[in-house]
Length: 293
Image 1: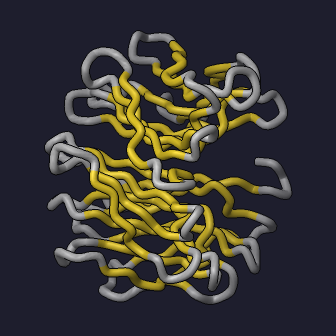
Image 2 (image 1 turned 135 degrees about the vertical axis):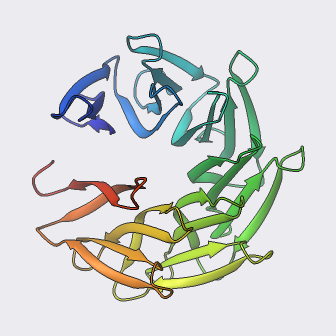
């Protein structure tokens, strides 16, 4: 788990790889560690993208692939690096989507060529917050993100060889808190929030065209969503119930959507991150606002 230490303004990393929980300070150079995103490569090395909020306003990257933590400023071209999302491809190349605060654009960075290269993917208004990125088996990139100007869920991919952007859902103010995953066939699955109605929504192109579904509409729900697929392609989503301030979970593993409250012990469920292991067990990390833990 990568996370921001609010008390010390540091990027931290926690793992139970040794059998017990251990926490490391990865970067303490200023107010660093906002909008973290973590992935592992094939050798189990850790890769983290994050935002340097106060000092230099950069997109930063940290890895322990050399055996010790090394941090790098990937993009220092203005105030950049919000809402990062990182993935590692089969060749262990790193891919990061992020938001450019100066120009209100969606940007993308990769070291696939051996050096970091940054690209503006979408500059059509105020776009690019709440990004979520995945890489398919062919190395193509898929990104979901929020179009703040129009209140739309958008999707970008370079699968055709050039970047193509699509408005997936424009029914109200939708598309914040996106989380994207790819199934074994390369189909896209996205969870996101409908701010107009306070709903959790889900979109997929598995049928060949985009289909959107309201998963949970009980109260003000759907923020801080995190989506993953199991081995059979069923969807699992963690998210915040903003009415009861609980951590909630939804899945379609039975063939229809089933919703559970996972934690109702106070004001919990912010910044959730969900993964499914090889045995299809679900794991969720999240923030307890009352206890700061």
